[in-house]
Length: 320
Length: 246
Ligand SMILES: Cc1cc2nc3c(=O)[nH]c(=O)nc-3n(C[C@H](O)[C@H](O)[C@H](O)COP(=O)(O)OP(=O)(O)OC[C@H]3O[C@@H](n4cnc5c(N)ncnc54)[C@H](O)[C@@H]3O)c2cc1C
Ligand SMILES: Nc1ncnc2c1ncn2[C@@H]1O[C@H](COP(=O)(O)O)[C@@H](O)[C@H]1O
Image (cartoon, rainbow over all chains, first blue to last red; front, side, top):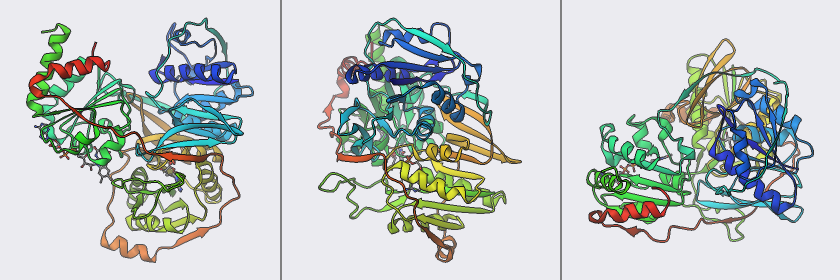
């Protein structure tokens, strides 16, 4: 049996989980093995049913209230109890997946291939797949001789395929093992779109001179339904919050479109963003290193180019 | 408190990465190695605990061959008390985790600190595996922690926000930016590090579960298409074509 774990983000299903479900459906067809989803904790009305649009037919829902909050111990216990003879377990490589997958790997004695972006392929005695290594500077083909494997899927690497199915949800209860990891509070960042899930990211660097100039960045992001990000010095200076810092030492992202404004394109910055499918650079220096690592470039002063772009987008959208 | 900081020995962030001819490994020639940047956050946090008299001993540990001792020495210069090297090739995350867990089992650590991932393999595997092997609580992507009366209050990054947890010690944690400010070793630290011990331990018998078949370079971005700022509608069209605007 192949299993896919659906993450619970305060009762909602994240985009990363839809990608994982769609990936698991494709894998189930390829390996000719049945697939079952696993979801833990309370979900919003009708939320789990949405997975039927992506070809999922079977789902086990562990309904206990206790799984409302993620706990690496409790989730590991619950998943370990629910699975029966698993061959592959698929998880999104998100914040929870990175804690759950390695624990499960030990508990179930199934090797872990993490952050992969290709469909698992049978190879020799086991499986192989590709993943990013060396902070986007290398692509690694990994192999495990095991017949049983856990994989975590890199965000934005698999485009969900729509496929209508009739979804059968079985509910069950598994008592939570401990309260050793107890969630006592939560804070939502002000940005509307989570950075790691965003389709489009608008990012600003030191070229923007100061925090007072971020109005146009936010306006552009809003028009594109994008998340905002920044370079390290911008976060270090306190112009923007730390959770927007992308790069080698910040967050690694792989959106469909990354728009870098007033960022030079240092190697540590690229390490966090070069997995993006398309990169657009706006910089006034035509020799900025970023122009050697992008798909589209505009050489110009951000304080002229960005307002012009905003106006042009508004015209296109019929807003101006 | 007794604190373990697991340190990964990784290529410097500015290094141009090249692979050996058989495409199986990193070409180490001419590469400078550093403390994994996320491990620096956990190390700095641990040294801070010592300064506040909350930690008695900070031990840094790396699983790897002799060459990793240069990185352990840097960690000693930053303020760790003692370094341990487990003498085996870190062939996969499982080997590393099994060796760290075997060592930790005998040591009664109150805190076991890791980085959120190593910047070479980017696996995010070792800390969770260690937590499970030791049957300890685990908080990943920690950006803040306060310890009071054997309890930790930890903030962790989640999708679009953060979460605060209360966890009893002993605890396994992986650090994200924010946990502590990186520290730079000073002259005194470097001098003191010379006299601090690096204990070498024999590995436990384990076999890797995952291997690298091949390493390739990512497809470079072949060419930048320049758009005239005077013709900004062309950029709007690009955004439409890429599905960024509808
Ligand atoms: C260990 C280590 C880890 C690091 N990790 C990261 C990381 O994770 N992420 C990261 O981003 N950096 C990281 N760095 C820092 C990195 O090396 C660079 O210093 C940093 O990315 C530069 O940020 P920047 O491009 O915003 O600023 P700058 O390099 O100062 O570049 C500003 C750019 O803006 C352009 N500009 C100026 N004015 C305008 C204008 N009016 N209109 C348009 N363009 C303009 C300039 O031409 C220039 O290219 C790290 C460094 C180290 C040593
Ligand atoms: N060879 C190693 N020796 C000691 N600690 C390691 C080693 N490799 C990884 N780690 C630790 O595990 C964390 C996550 O690494 P990884 O699972 O490889 O992404 C690192 O930040 C280190 O704290």
